[in-house]
Length: 506
Image (cartoon, rainbow, N blue to C red; front, side, top):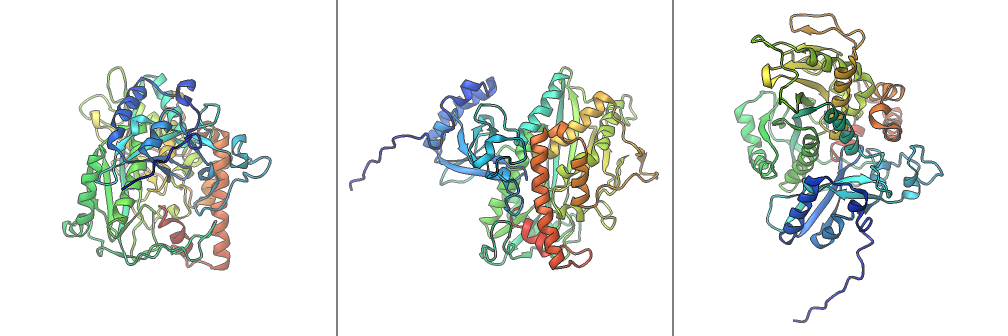
């Protein structure tokens, strides 16, 4: 049989700039060496998903043939700025057609392309036989080769550079709660969908009754999905520690061993994306929405464990001297920094309308007040462990938070405490034995956004990203508040607006 040979004249439509990486010196020696390994392995790959985390922490990607990716690897790829412009419901929140979009980034005017450059250190083959598909995370750049001001991964890189300058290295451990449910049908939920008008959420059923914490029989009902998922995560090289059944019906907690901070953020992006993909392909639905509108759902959280070591000695600076352990001066300073920045940066850890439902006194293990305690799971900051294992667990985050911004916010605030002695006002460190109350954490996205706008977030994010995030969150809030005006919600109940907005996408 005769097959016609088609000749491609140019790949420049997808390639960012010839020699973009080399011309702007974007890679270090480790990345250059990794790129050579990737190029040598491309003959065993069919497709490559080039992904990056948008401001909401959702993975946005393009799937390229291996041949196309070979041209993109060192040249970058043109990418629309749409992911920077849409809120959680795909409503346009940044006026890119005006003369001034209002975020200080001229290149997004008219929706001009930015350049996504794959980080070869993140390249890995996804489990499965055919097609042989790889995943790689990209960094975002302006066309002049500078880091994109709206890139959340770039924010974390800047924070980590501050640690490196001081001879320090942070480590981050992830504990993530999420819901596994069974799909009732294959309906896409597109009726009534559009820009800022999310269609129906997936129709699902619980996989068990819940409310038997860590019951082995309940885990057995999710094991047909979570056990093979665990094996796939290990194949991806993720340092998985455990799959556990939490309290809610089909609620899962997945934990990972400590990682370098950038690796932890990349791992969170890959884990959430891959878990949803894995479950969907098997007739189930995974959601990282904090509190879905499902019968008897208990809110999910994301606990972020963090410690800091001296790079020269490997010493954990949170470890107190002496056999009795306790809280080291550096651990106390780091915790004080976290508390001093709580309100300014809270929206980076709890970014959705829905996430604030968890921060209610009725949920006894959810943090509601600003303070720290030793070995107390009701505290915002829980100081845990001794010696090399000493760390601080921040319990405020929701599982759909942007991993780069959530982790960057923690490390930035902690470093500020270590270097400037930033002390929180009106907070008291206590043990579980009893203590004065500290201030309440923000109780709504509206309150959190007001503190974000009035505070010092630009010091971490840069003014463009701070302005962009404010526009995205304001758009989300305005749509939610308009819905509530026409459909007054029942007190304490998750609204259908929230369930449609977050349950599918997250």
